[in-house]
Image 1 (tube, one colour):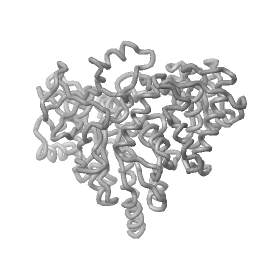
Image 2: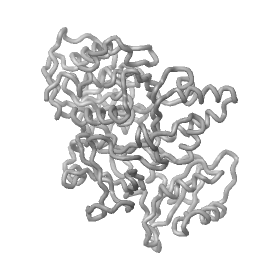
Image 3: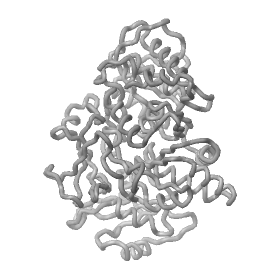
Image 4: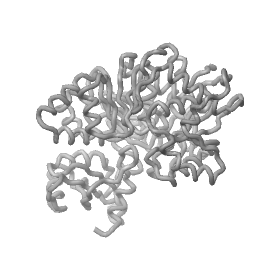
Length: 503
């Protein structure tokens, strides 16, 4: 299949030219604006060449019209888009630019100084988005795009090793988008607010690309600010909102701090939306319950990864089970296997393996890692789950969330869920710390409510009344905040370091 459109996006955009596509800090833009801007960007990138031929183009661009123009322009020119995180320091930006073997870098005028020295050192061209928008050759011929061509490289969070470049083809991206549009019933009358980072599948695919594929509107904020989000929820005509659990926790705190009359307005605004989704990290049941009482929404939990897009989802219509991530999405095959690779019976824990058109093609220039990631065509996620009545429950990553202590296999996520119900605890992370006697000691890092007082002994006594003895934390560390990555996920390897330091 050949197209002149990044996974069909431009072709679809041309069918709704005058509809509003994006709203950012500078104003509103139609689909026709997006097409004109991205075609001009593609011509500028090609500079008379016929095809970028999968050259990697890294871009550090603030969320908004310029971001989409850069991304679509790279695709239309036949390049591979490599989004850079606006939150990353120069060493991490340099790593991504170098590892992807980028041929050039695009940056917002406000961010260009963060990458200019990196480009100078590597001898790479460095364009601002203003320069990208300059007229290229008139009526430039754009290359045809085979569906199996590489389209994008997103970098993993690097929680267990250096980040790896996850390569998705145009066909992979299209499959990821189509399955979500189908499952969550996206349509042209939808309006979604984007507050998520745009170097990650959650923001790029689940929000931005699904919206633009559907002819919907996407309001793009430059990051998350609780009061600003509440204002949009209360006053605008949003139909969808998607975020990570940390965002919902902060929105809850902001709501609780508001006057009673304002709270009522905020809650009423939420009730006008048709769907609110949580993902990218485990959603505490306490947060789900509190958000439901505030907004009237039972958050839809789903499961996905950079390598696979989304694989499991609670239903749009039907029961959404707290603590579960639902069933396989359309076009996605899922199975759970034991350590020998054999399927496990229902109710038993097993590693999640995924197969389908949405699964990535390769780790960039890491053939051994790519080979190790697949078994008989199934992607090995490294996550452990169990299934009951068709609903999957994530128990954690086999490498960091499944603890082996005293001969028991223990889910860190299960313990965390219990600890969060303590009235003085706002956040927690449970890890396994190496121990000669136990194999691993169950260790918990806790964030307490402001002004709270809780000792390790008191916490252990409280936990012993709710958890089996082998699940009660042997070590407790109180901290002002938990270490997190750019997506708000707690980084368990950094949490382990807290227990290596003197208490």
